[in-house]
Each structure stands twice: as structure tokens, then as C-alpha cells.
Amino acid sequence: MTHSFLIAGFGGQGLLFAGKFLVYKGMLEGKEVSWLPSYGPEMRGGTANCSVIVSDDPVGSPIVDHPDVLMVMNLPSLDKYENAVQSGGMIFVDSTLIERKVERTDVKTFYIPATRMAAEGGITTLANMIITGKILKELGEFDEAGVEAALHKVVSAKHPEMYDVNLKALRLGRDYE
Image (cartoon, rainbow, N blue to C red; front, side, top):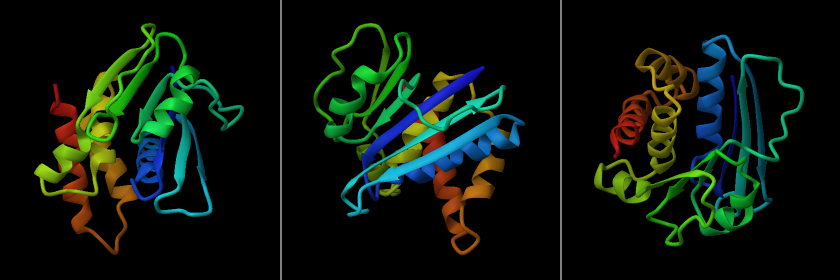
């Protein structure tokens, strides 16, 4: 089993955090992992993405050219990466921020109004984790104990209050139909 993820959007949307969470979850499950962040010099507001690989086998290269899972949180990222997704892969779209539909018919597409859900849930900065929760559900990888353990690794000890809100966001995504 190997999953290659590309998580893309603007800096400040928590894309790298979501990727780091997926990597820690994989590591804690005994998987081979890689996490490769990429962002413009502007940081917040500029383009950002990260490549994540979680595999049963050693990872030869951290570069993800053709992900089987694409998470996009802005229109430029959907425009840029839609055609890179493997046939039969999955695309997860923040439909609050992206109005256009995925044009491909050989992938499974999920439209999650994550930014709106985060605002309504009082967790405005966690649309990234709402989509991550949906991704884990669709992959059959939303294991409560594994999710909680990974969150303990990525939530800073300086901000322990962020543990519960991140868990809330992941569960919102998991439960979204």
C-alpha cells in the first residue's frame, strides 16, 4: 500500500501542518514516509504545497509528480494540479473557495465546503484539517486512536488547546457527507 498526496493552496492555510499530520500518522503505524514542503518566498498568502508519501515499502524519492490523492484549497492549485492526479485517484476540493468543478471523469472528486464549515464551527483556521478528516475517511484510514496519537505529535506543546479543535475539525471532515 502506498498513498502519494499533494496538498496545495495558499500559504497560511495549514497545508504543511496537514501534511505533517499525515506523515506522523503513517510513522506511528510503522509505515515508511516522506514529507516535502514547497512554498514561495511570500509565505502567508503566496503559493504553498507539500508532497507526502505513506507506504509499506521504502520511499525512493520524496517528489510526488502524480499523486493518487490531491487536496486543493485554492483555484490556482486546482488549475495547476488537476491533470497530474493518477487515473482512479481522488481530488478533494474546498468548495467554499473553489467554485469550478473538476473536469476529469477518471477520478473521484469530493467537494467539501471546509472553509465555511470551519467558520460555522468556530474553528476558522482549520479548514485544512476538515478536508484531511474527509481524506482519511475515504481512504478507510480514519482510526480514532491513530488520529489522536498523530495529533499529539504535531500539536505544539505551547498550544495544547489546539489539540481539541484539530480533533473536532478532523471529525467534522470524517462525518461530512
